[in-house]
Length: 130
Image (cartoon, rainbow, N blue to C red):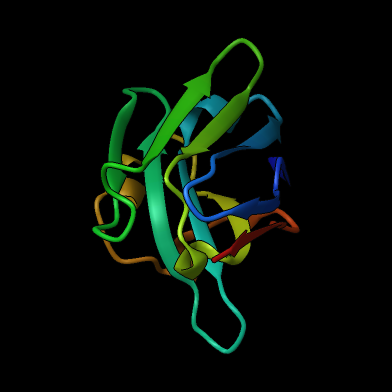
């Protein structure tokens, strides 16, 4: 089993930056697809970025491409989401979720499917003011 904990959220003005962290526990953490996704008030969950940790292959939604970067620190078992040039529409609760171990197909879809995630954390709030 794997557990995830997000941190790093906060309030920034438009154009600012934040770096979110997703700390994982468990021996199989580094063998999974990790997805960052978000939910704004009154809206459905939206996939932001994902990375298949064994290969390091990444993917981004069109709404954040060029502004957000997902990366990993294998030694620390942490996945980061560097967010630059933040916009008010980026305001949301941000979550990281894990797929199954040794299942690269969990990173195939560009569309977020919560049912494909084994677990996710409690989230960290990001608020961007105009």
